[in-house]
Length: 72
Image: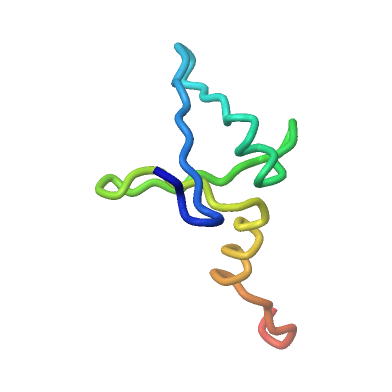
C-alpha cells in the first residue's frame, strides 16, 4: 500500500527507560537534530502527537499573543 504524498507512518519501540528512537527517515524529513526539544501533546482518547519543530513557539504566541505595552 502506497501512502499519499507527504504522509508517512513509522514504528518506534519504547525502551526500559521509556525512551523511543525516532526513525532516521523521520528525523531527516522533519529536520530533527541531536539536542532539539520536541513538544509532545497527549489526549487520552486520541493518543500522542509530536507537532513539527517550531510548533511550541507558534502555540505560545497563539495562547499569549503580543502584550500591549499600555497594560504592562
